[in-house]
Image 1 (tube, helix red, strand yellow):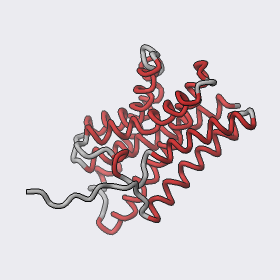
Image 2 (cartoon, one colour):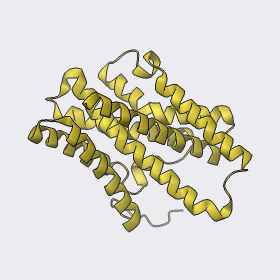
Image 3 (tube, rainbow, N blue to C red):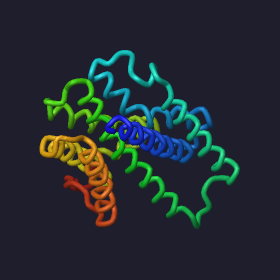
Image 4 (spheres, one colour):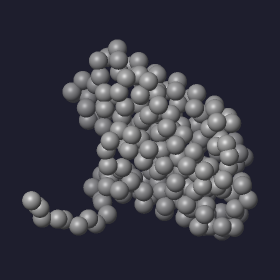
Length: 217
């Protein structure tokens, strides 16, 4: 059951982050090739980083390119819709921003679950810190790559408590597994928690503390 549930989370994360990457690429006025590359790296970059850290060579995206293909198909669908509709009309700009937030949040939550489970399936079930870290890097890795390639400050450092819900979700997942002895409920609850925390952070404008610097000449 955990394996089939993991496949579902993989698919959700891939589609969500591919849409997020494609929309960002279109926003940055990239051509169709750039949009595809950004969507693929956003969708698969977290897993790529996770595999490199785990010493899993070649990374899974090169052994089984199914999710790379899914990301490319999604990217081209998004590009086609935006191309033929000449972008997003001004009156829909708020809906567009909310959509980007939703897809980003779904990708974060789904890939956090994926990272923890991949670590557990590789035999690291007793190393809680590693499992949480793998969930974290799988969740945020693609978004960081997307932001760096599109020349903007990675959201992980500045936006709506972006990374903290992933860490909290990962901790909940490994703790729940220890308590109840099954991954299924832990996966579903931690996935939901990440989404809830992100929605609350956006709604109440929660952010981590920052140093407010005076203007410096």
